[in-house]
Image 1 (cartoon, rainbow, N blue to C red):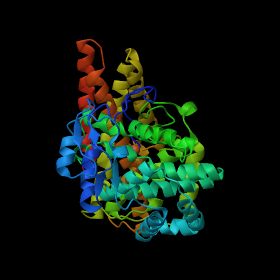
Image 2: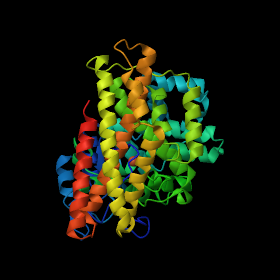
Image 3: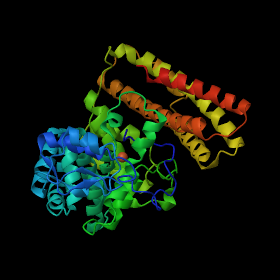
Length: 462
Ligand SMILES: [Fe+2]
């Protein structure tokens, strides 16, 4: 869910006068706190009232599952995080231990850290952290309730700081990138675990809830003098993209900050390295095919430096065999090229119809998203007959060097499949809710959308 999601915009200009989502509706943070209470102890520090002044929870109560149930039925007078205390909140010394465990348990990241001589600076960054107490509370709750998310935060902060250093940003900006990388998904704590843990395809409303994490994150972080000014903005912008297909506001590169895009790049690589790669044993070096397809997604300078970091990391690509035997690889790649061509056709048809109607800002985001994906497919040559010809020449004796080339094509295909899925989701949301065209046009768009969905299903089969 963190992976570079181009998307339907959540709310343009969402940072202007939006209601505080922690008090304008029941706050799912109560559920996460109750879970943290099992391990750490979470106590109310004052009487907690609902929005109409009714007492809900007395001071000094443990926030257990029953309390949480009660809290989850009401809007609160004040944000819950300001009315509770979590035991054993993470200190800088604890973070040092956490980063050290993290590096030791990921050999490739540890290797990159050593090759790039980053250990000392990382220790200084951790030692110099000044997190507001509410932020330290939330990171503690994240570690207890969403441990995978916490590990991803460690990775993102590590890489964001490294990119900032390699770009020769000044010390303050490297620190800001480090902190923003660590806390960029803090808004997830205000989304219910049912939505966060849902398996399978998310519904349009679930996506909207998930996308709200950037706005909530910014809301939580605004106004703390301990945090560099750029941090809240970077958190808001970490799913924005320079091509204007991101969320929440689909800003273009002229309106995005460097640190926000450094965090966006770190978060995208986090989703690969800590997510999909973890299952296949791939390492940080294997993100290069993904980067090749995203050279302009987060400022070209950030892309260049990230490629340099990977090249200097001392890592080699990982040859990964097909789970059912390497003889399955050639048919898989050939099938996918065929389905990619079908998807290209459907996307071109949709973009053509969209170009002829007045779809408003969200229609325009959909067109841009399809254009970007189509452009990526064309420039990478991933749907070309020449590639097909090369693949068909591969015989059954696949040695490691051929396997690495096949892996690279597969990784690029995976990224394109992900991008098509994301564009299709953006378009479906637009079609479902905001596409005001006559019924014949609707039917045409629906038909192409169904065809695109079918191609996607086939592309996702291995
Ligand atoms: Fe995120």
